[in-house]
Image: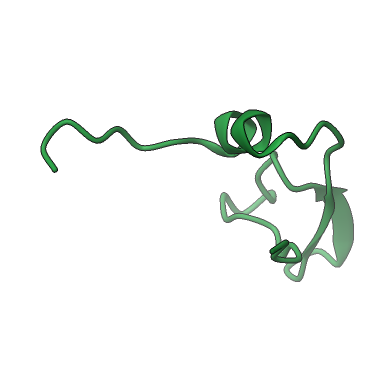
Amino acid sequence: MKNLKKLNRNTLKTIKGGNSTDIGYCPDNQTYIPCDELCPNGRNPLCAIQA
């Protein structure tokens, strides 16, 4: 367990085979941005969970 590294969204998409960036919603300023970016307040946007 010590040797596990944290994966970011881009790495996970590459492993999973995804290539397009999903669009997420920032509730603080009510805008839509790509899920691999952060909202202006520094939090992650609300994105759909893909199974």
